[in-house]
Image 1 (spheres, rainbow, N blue to C red):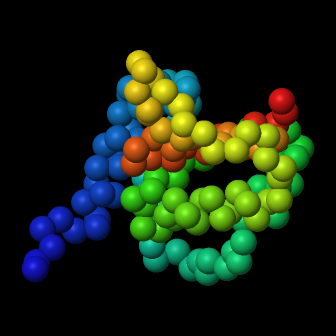
Image 2 (cartoon, helix red, strand yellow; image 1 turned 60 degrees about the horizontal axis):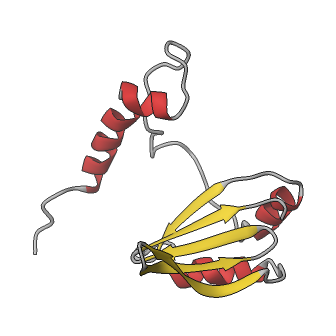
Length: 134
């Protein structure tokens, strides 16, 4: 089966999205402070060699830095089970084990809490939020 859309089409769309005024406003980019957004060239000499990001996340999280990390369960690069294994590898104690959460009287997803992460699973998406204290 012939592929109808090339991978570079996503780069093309990203260009317009990142240079859109509404996108920049939502990201808090003050008008006139940042020029045109362009994607890095693939021709740059770069070797990716990061065996694990766990030490970095552990260091930053325990220092009180906050971040919102998104991982979807249909993401073939970082699937849901990998996200859960990554969080378990940090060896944080469990503050609140998996439980259902509801919206308008219906089950909307699952949530899980550790001292540094809140993990919420909603149908086809997982949101992992770094939290620095409870």
